[in-house]
Image 1 (cartoon, rainbow, N blue to C red):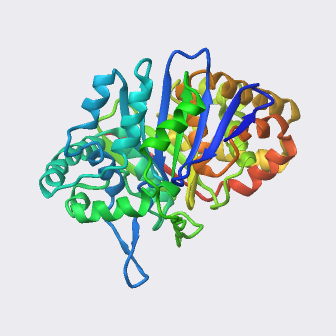
Image 2: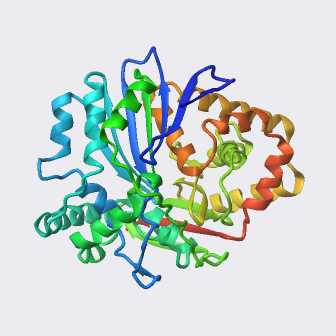
Amino acid sequence: MMPIVHPLLGDTLYSFTHSSGLPVMVWPMENASSVYALFATRYGSVHNLLPTSDGGTEEVPAGIAHYLEHKLFESEEGDAFKRFAATGASANAYTSFDRTAYLFHATENILPSLDILLDFVQHPYFTPETVQKEQGIIGQEIRMGEDNPGRRVLFNLLRGLYHTHPVRIDIAGTVESISHITPELLYRCYEQYYNLHNMVLVVAGHITPAQVQEACDRLLKPAAPYTVAPPAFNEPDTVVEAFVEDTMPVAAPLFYLGFKEPAGDITPTALAVARILPDLLVGKSSPLYTTLMEKGLINASFGADYFSGPGYGVWLFGGESVHPEQVAEAIEAEIRRLQTEGIDPEAFEAARRGAYGRLIRYLDSPEDCAEVLLANLLDGVPPLSELDALSTLTAEELHRQLCARIRPDNRTLSVVRPM
């Protein structure tokens, strides 16, 4: 077990790879009153291929990773949620584009709750009857998502940005795609992606590394050494279309402006840039934000973000606007200006300090600390290395990445207008 003392925070984290093959990270927090644990796999909606016996691959139904997340809580002994309820723990799970995570938050009966987490994720149980029953439940969830304007404007954007990459497909799939899911397919996906070598365990809060290791020793089954090959995507650099428009019963037009980033490696510096750049461009203290607000082109719903994963990366700007095209033009012009003129050192330093302070404040609870560590492990960067990158990033490096990662002409504007 390797202790990691972070020089900026002063906290000691513990990292080890269990004999079963599972990487484990523990963040003991003596002053915390609770524990937050995440048991996750590198398996999300974009992992849409399975190997075949002849050495090839076959495409599986869209939404199967999310479907598997739902079904894994069931077992012959009963529902895992009921087991957590008996310990007083709050349990949940989520599936994103590139990962699936199972979690619990508890203030008492910590170790019994950790036992449940490690146990049920390792014991899949699928029958034709339960799989068919879930199709109706998830089908209703998909229909509700289709009626959500925020979800509609986002996935319209992704379909405008990406030609073939599965990030363009809703994480839950479609009603038609999930109708093809069978117990056999679920078991094959489980065997492929739920190998402990492809998973991670992160625990933060009032717990010791020895307690976590003891639970792992008792409950983890040794896994055959196996590494899931990273997916390869044949995605063109260009976007599908520059403008996508839709109508829904909304009070005001919603929009997302997205810039398609060239696929690249995830590094601590790249993560630090992703925290600073949106604030520098359109943060509430930026000149552009002030101008757009004064002209009535945006309101408090406006914001910017960045997300990435295997083969995709998107810079995202959006909110409500009566003139989304004008907002998009202003953002594109500001990006070109900064790429041409460079980044003002004072503005950069203000944005850097702001991003650093927000991240420090964010690392104030077991939940947030565990989520940051999970992202670090799955992204393949050293724990909390983003903090170190934020403290040393320069305006010159930020400008270089701005020029390399955002092409103002390689973008899509998605708008949902009132009916």
